[in-house]
Amino acid sequence: MSPVVARISSDESLPSAVDVVIVGGGIIGSAAAYLLAKRGFAVALLEKGYVGCEQSSRNWGWVRRQNRDSRELPLSLISMQLWDRFALEIGRDLGFRRCGLTFATHLESTLQQWESWRPIGEEFGVRSHILSSSQAAALIPESKRTWRGGLQVPDDGKAEPALAAPVLAEGARALGATIHQQCAARGLDLANGQVVGVHTEKGYVRADAVLCAAGAWASRFLRPHGISFPQAGVRQTALRTRPMENIGEAIYTSDFSITRRLDGSYTLAISGKATIDVTAQGIRYFREFAPQFARRLKNVRLGFGNSFFSGPESLPAMLTDNDRIFEQNRVLDPAPQKWLARQVMANVRAAYPQFVDAVIDSMWGGLVDCTPDAVPVISKVEQARGLVLAAGCSGHGFGLGPGIGLLASQLLVNDTPCVDPTPFRLSRLVDGSKLDIAAI
Ligand SMILES: Cc1cc2nc3c(=O)[nH]c(=O)nc-3n(C[C@H](O)[C@H](O)[C@H](O)COP(=O)(O)OP(=O)(O)OC[C@H]3O[C@@H](n4cnc5c(N)ncnc54)[C@H](O)[C@@H]3O)c2cc1C
Image (cartoon, rainbow, N blue to C red; front, side, top):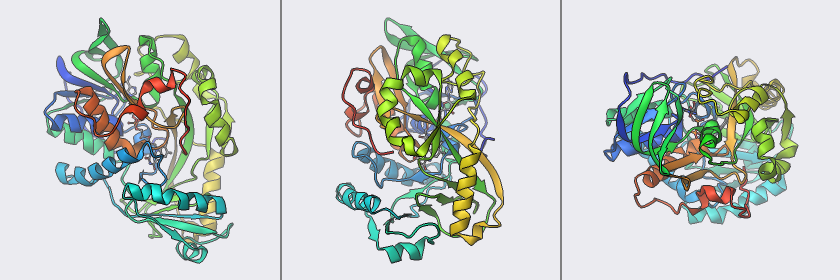
């Protein structure tokens, strides 16, 4: 089942020519559309389903700088500033609140890792406070575990996944961009290695530059053009309660995470627990992903089923260059993992009696698109001048989305980049560079 996401209208007809076409209306594509339109560029945002319908509405909504890999930290600071600005500029609430994040752990090693990250965070202005075991227990009830300690990060926060991408897309439209839903991009038009337009299911658009922000579909979108992007999906599960008593805003333990949403309901999940489905694309990029997945083995299950036969990593997606595959899969809606949903509920109820009678409104799966080193790609693409790829956010892309959208927009129009783009270059994944895998 898909989570609820605010629906926006589409523009009726495709423009014949624009400065930039954006493929994918998730948080990255929508943020880039807004930021480019604000600079006065003509933008068409293409979305095969509806804006925000895939990962960007299926996440917890955390906007977290805490524990970010140092390569992502500069961009996460910029993202924070953009999150602060968007509601003021657009005049609509995206649900962004610097509500603070609270963590507790039963493991000395985790506590030490938080402690050792603090100076790194402080360099980037991230304030955090280590909690003693009793302070942690006062904030997050102990049930199965005794807390060794905790962490509070007062200035990090959350935004509303049902609203963020749609509000940004509408903000872009108010500045002149056009939004085209149910309008899959079928492929790029290249002339002498330069992008000159995009073929879509509703016709052709000429463009000087194209952003591929197609989330889990990015690798499949690029492959027919001879561009290799090692990407793999990890299936996660989340649940949403009906609105209920307030027991906290954003809480993390190894047994559950809970996030209060704008309407007073909660998103519930367990961090890191997931299924890696065996897929044709997964087999193709097995060598690249083996080191990362080996690290995660304790928390993941292997699955075999639908994703082998349909979706971006499926056998048909690998064997053919069928350019209708995107419109044939309007919304990627992977099944939630029932075993995980049961674990989340049992763990949350053991800690919080308030959840014993909570009604589960919905649950869903989401395919987190990962890179081999768990750092996004935000990069010009050598084989296609004028093309920028921004994908592979590896589970961090909602909070980082505004910053990723900004950097991508700057690369598209050859502006000075807001951060050094080198760590995000695509080539590191394909030229044999030694990869440094980020913590997930
Ligand atoms: C359960 C879960 C929890 C998460 N929690 C967090 C969190 O708390 N904080 C955080 O920062 N991140 C979190 N994430 C990760 C975050 O959701 C993603 O990193 C982020 O949303 C990626 O955004 P995106 O725009 O790249 O991709 P998406 O949101 O997936 O958008 C890509 C869009 O491209 C469209 N598309 C694809 N191909 C085409 C085509 N050919 N033509 C037109 N459109 C196309 C798709 O339909 C889709 O809408 C979580 C993810 C999941 C699944």
